Length: 151
Image 1 (cartoon, rainbow, N blue to C red):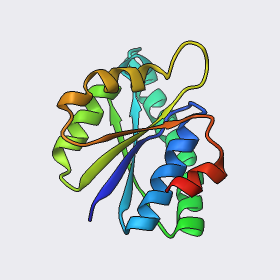
Image 2: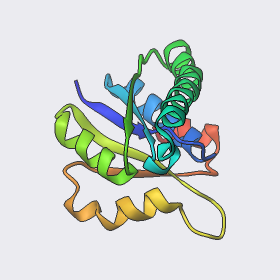
Image 3: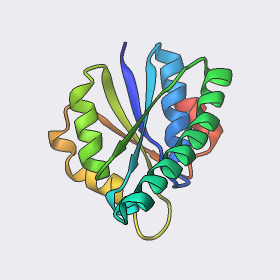
């Protein structure tokens, strides 16, 4: 089964990327993989503190995931899979895409402020020519109604 890969982070635009992936998955019979990456700087402290911080980060991610997963299951009939990795986001995204041949599309949400679409969209766009899958960038300020209409 083909899967849409979406990155779960703390940005507002992440919501539209999740919506888009779930709607497309529902309409095409695909699945959704949600990737959350814990950056290395979040746990580069004393060993005991680092373990606590990792556990807290994972709990926060799992709670955030459950909100999206419930909506996807209840409203779209899609049961997403959660993957949590530690490292640099771009590296972890590429590693996951290469290791899971069912992932067919990477979906990212673009920021709407004056600083640009966001660091992840910028970095992945630079690499888009060599990505093994298509990259879909969803505008962060697109309405739910418009998302539903285009999916």
